[in-house]
Length: 384
Image (cartoon, rainbow, N blue to C red; front, side):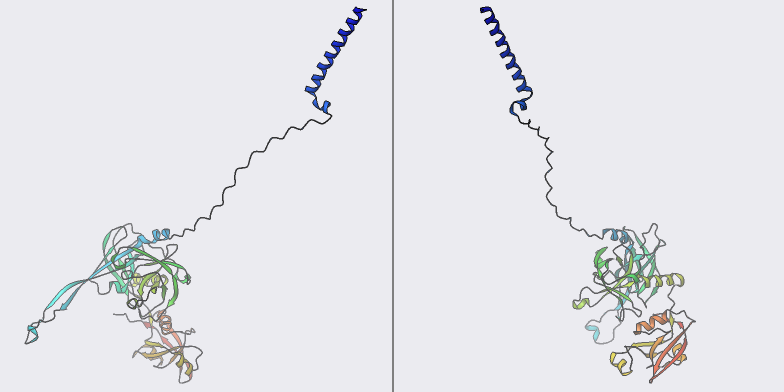
């Protein structure tokens, strides 16, 4: 009996140990079976943290530069130096005031300076006529430092232009733009040799176009600009923002009374025509009929019952084509070849565009009566 009891205790103990072992395995391997709740899901891997946002940056400042335009045009702008021999009478001394004395004279060299623009590889240079007027010698200095004597090919006082020639190789040449496309407000730059400071660039805008009747030259059609033009800039280049030549700087107005920002340049379209004629003929050939036109004031136009101010023949040359055609001083010019002249400059410019030998038809008003005549165009006399 004791043996059966012992065997039973051994069996029970083994069963308990085996159950505990099984329970331990179940708790380790499947804990959700013990708690009756699903096993917690494994957390998803965290997404990589986004880089911190960059702080907002200010827009870069706008950088406006005309350096490329200057580099393109400036090498073709030259300094022009002129010299002439001047003979002047010496004032008498106090002792010579009483009695006879032999007049004494002395000579001196008068020098002047200006600017010019190289316009072709052959060495032709455009400048102002007043820069080289009365000069005995002309010398040119290039932007690269080279110096050469220049000869005068031709001059045109009517537009204040002249053409020079130098003999140097590998010359920089200005590229022509179109002055007829200019608008008020366009950016322009003036390049020249002001007050002997060597090459200098100034900046401004087109203030006006087709400025006339300024008393600078007989035939005027100026570009007005506020780009500073000083003594020595005459004959230099007026360029656009792309570096193209659009004018030849010519004059400033009322500098002696403190007026600033009013300068004038000859438009390049006019320069091109004058230059071509000088190179072809040594001079500019223009039409002429011998009238001296004047502008009518608004009051005079009103008295003549004209809708707008007009042009009157102030005088004419004896034996001129106009006189032969029957025109008289006091005749009011209503139309030239069907075009109404708005000013005396308009009338002269229109006639100047005719070739000598051609005819021009003029409609005029005299004593309240309108009439028409044809005048045979001659060649405009050359200015002295």
